Length: 539
Image (cartoon, rainbow, N blue to C red):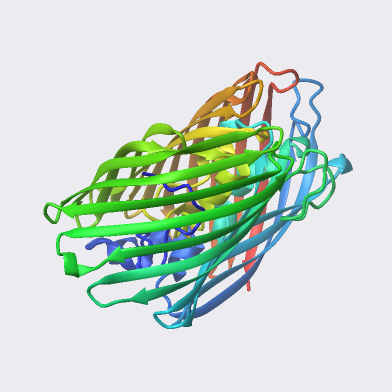
């Protein structure tokens, strides 16, 4: 069953399964070092100990033939993009940290009203204050979404496009950020800090208590520089949450049986979401039975008390239950399947990763819940690990996070949502292939007029090493559905980029992208050609 709490999914007793560069399955460690280094700045540094701080500066020039993204009249513009950034990787006895921050300044030659400063940030870290006892988890995300949704299902929230001299040129993030008109951009951000304590009782078990403070915002970009975590505009949204958490998990004393008892309480206040305040309290007990090294079955039972007040009022008070299995066919693969009752409805859940070969990884995640869109962002952030390409992924399955958030339009209200994400990645000696498929469905609850909308998205990418210093990346993406209620939309994105590594700290790149959006909503059908050239210097 998927948890409704915001407390981090990954911690000292439930570590992330997302591999670093030093954890590649044999025999690919030597063969793939160079290719993964080209694919992202995180990968080439992932196995280093200590602290690495790498500032950089990207300068880009962009041409578009439809700067306002309208059917007519189409207007061209030249845009200068200045994007300083910094990558920080820390691996010490007391701190583990992976983050990247990049503000993107866009200055338009003709249409100065389109000038803006957008923010991009991905980061996850853990600080050990008292070894084996007291820890602090910190994580944050900031990115730009298409306010109306769609556009191939792409967006910069949680996605790659940062991290070293190659990240700024090969990732999807910056392309979409630069390709979306200002009046269709929403700056979304979420931050959380979670101090918690672990208590070891030998073979009897492990206890955990902790709390989480979180802030999340979604601000339409109407001014020059929207500030993450600061809202105040007419259409802006904000969420403040305070959560308390306690858990006890039995140890080896019960042999093939593991019992996990947990209690969680969360209080939130919000604005611009259709909700003024909410409370959520849950208790549950789960018993796992290990049949053998490959098969685990479980059952759980509990109670939930969920309350929302405001224009969208909702009450859920009922028993929760679930049954499922965890399959571990080999040391590099795991799949969890479940069915039960949670958040007021009967639901399926699935999460897993499967090593098809030493070079190919399949990932899947199907989760659901009840909450506002900002609560969904906060929930996904607390599942996150930073992958080698700098994007945020589910720490237990490896699936890309925020794919569904980027596909949907930014709206207010309480929703019952279902998110399915499937991914496949193959890394060869000179090629990297990637596939991501997402399906997002949400139904509004607690309002007089209930609406439903959903989007199916697909993304293909192929990175090919033409020479040790020249890399080409081709991408294609599509989305189909209703990103906002009553708005039937189809969108397609295709792109080709070339990157040349001049020195270890200097790269040049060129990119062409094509966008085509077909929408039933007025003035939202358009197409655009976008050309971009630039350089990135790492200091």
